[in-house]
Image (cartoon, rainbow, N blue to C red; front, side, top):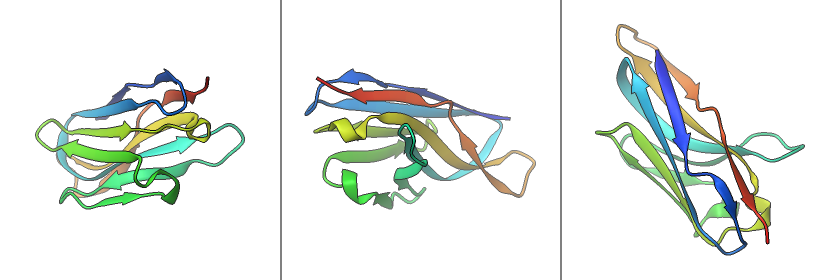
Length: 121
């Protein structure tokens, strides 16, 4: 069983910063990609950023230059530093990891419960 616990959401003014963190725990054998998705009201969930276990990163165009994803493999943690936030960044942010549990040969996606980020003056 693998659990994801997210933290760091909240309310911030335009131009402000927030840092999201997500820690995976449980019977983990290996983690491949770790990432963040978001879902705004009335919209589909979209990829924000992800990072491979080798450190390669991918960002959606709208956050490039403003958001930075990082991971700590020893702690099974992925973080998202969000700077220069805009109202259009308002959404529920979900952590996602591609993980193999102990005793399994298959990697599966696991999701966090989501954390609200609101950018408003």
